[in-house]
Image 1 (cartoon, helix red, strand yellow):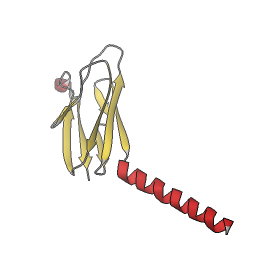
Image 2: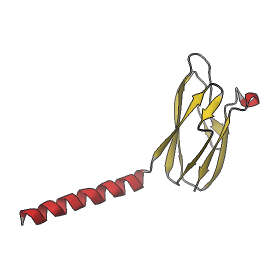
Image 3: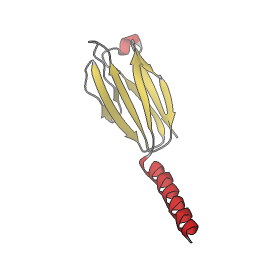
Length: 107
């Protein structure tokens, strides 16, 4: 009987962990290397949060896309949850001329 109760408890915990990871989605990270987002293109599933972060020692950047905008600073952590499929292009408005752009592809 104890073994059955233990097995049921383990099964319930396993189901709970799976459901929580599906419900809350994953987080993918994008950083900055020089004047480039890294990775430049990221593919994610619906419900995924993308977190941009950088600490560039005095060089300010930002992330601006349709429906989202970070602050402009040398040290930033900014997140956006993508709930609809599509291709989302974004840019650092300060360094757009230098090609500092990126893409989030949501499936």
